[in-house]
View 1 (cartoon, rainbow, N blue to C red):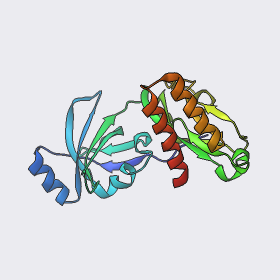
View 2 (cartoon, rainbow, N blue to C red):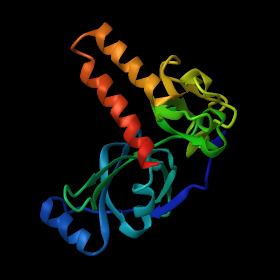
View 3 (cartoon, one colour):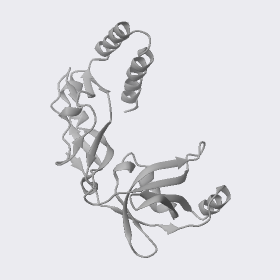
Length: 227
């Protein structure tokens, strides 16, 4: 099931001054330096938005799938998606945002988060299994107006040993999945079994993929402990 929400509207004010000093002054006024680019803004339009108005969305895991209407000074609106958020390396405060214009009738490529629901009801977990993640995103080509905030996937009926792949994830009608359908999304298994599978893969594939395989196994366990 695809989860959608109302579009966000934010005022976008054009700016002429550029450079580090200018951007610092802008941030001191609780504004965020930004740039708008896309089909009708190929050279980019520098501007500012209110930090308060964009902060929640920019900090959200769904920031790249939230359609944002930028309200220009002449009253016109431009439909956009956040393409990049630059942050302070220490404080992680937002320093700059890139907005990409999307046009009605033109498909765009986006990464949509997969949200797993009903963990507490999952049959496989009740049997002692754990969720091991392969990917949390699915890349699709889709109309801007059809972009969901996330795709909810119910695991209530999944049993121990179940494997879910990208091809099993329902996407909005009319969209094209670009991620390989054989990419694993989740695997519900006993921790010991998964560790043995990882060891077998390492032995078969040799030294090159070892770090990647081990890292994925460790990351999955860490994510599970965090949940």
